Length: 220
Length: 294
Image (cartoon, rainbow over all chains, first blue to last red; front, side, top):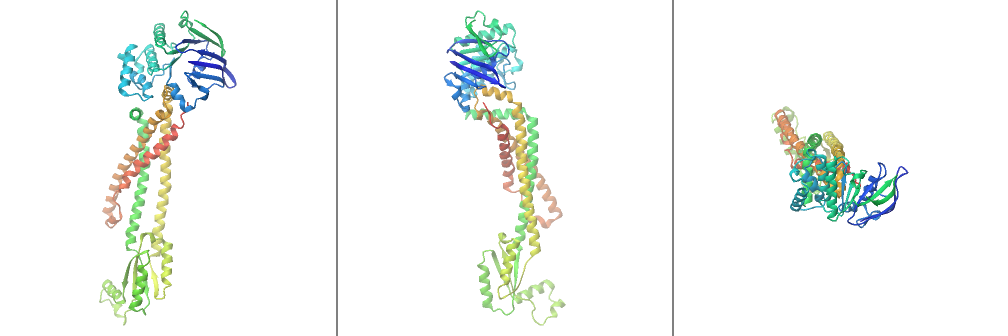
């Protein structure tokens, strides 16, 4: 699903990532961890093409990013769902519309959008909040809605950058449970976090980044 | 089509959400287009006045006394062949005297002092509107003067020159002002859309991550720009129409003779401000949104 070969990224002539090589299989759940500034976020940004590598090669969901034209980027992104620490829900539209947005950008039919979004919000227990605006939801609920938006179009890959960074332990546990469920349905999930307790004893693959290099690639 | 409908809805919502800044922009655009419309109307009225005046404008060709009727007919045919001349009237010596008597009164002592009719026969030539260029008329008058039977040619040379200069001056001002307002309208919309674009920077980033294409992101802004232009145009139009009707009615009240020389609010004036507003605002919006980079 994701293949990085000798990938490096520099900012102001200093490397942020150096010589990164790994392969993530389809359907895997992988954690990327490391201290602040280790390059976790940059690595994810390279995968969803918010950045381009200065060296090396990246293939995501069959797309060779080096050969991808800028016009094709939106279509690659439709196969990737992204979740952030700060949720990034649009504050001036309802939860329903936030989730529906991912389908609307792809030109979905209104009837299908309504059915899919309502069903998904029911599944995650947010149906009753569908017509509320994000600021009226708790942090955990907002992150749930953000995840719903990321997966509503059934992407092949879900990327989460510190998804529990702003949440209390209970909410964090719920969010991680949701990620595991999504992964069980076949979606490849990559989670960047510095909270070791999130991947401890999960039996899942953990990639440790240290100063922009892979320090360890092990099982949590 | 459904995406377009959704984007249109989004533009309406966004327009309403930012109603204060949008209202101010609409009013600014309205004011600019109103000034542009006012100058267009002044130019149209000026043109109408020229046309009215041109209807009565002509060359008077005074003839020598020794012409035969055959000569007069030949000369008349010659004038009729000229494409700049739309009407040819021959006034014989007798008719000229009759007209003078009617003007001065038959018993006027001035007329009694002549033993013979002192007035020459003449041709009155009315010209096409397009021929009413001072230089062109001057050349034509000179040309006619060269004809052997012609004694003299007269026309309101200074009047024509002044009126023509005035008309050209107003046209130049209208073009310059029009261009300035065109650019200003585009710039005002550009600034507003740029501000709105920056305000929605996070929203745009989110849309990009969700796989939105450039057109999906751009269109609501362009539609919003169009709303600004069209609404500004419509407000400018009706304000201008109100002011114009009030002003012309007041002017006619004081100067009834001007009635025929003012145009009613022309149909083109109904289309011009909204169309100009829409076009310029669209151009401004396109520049404001610029290239969306991934």
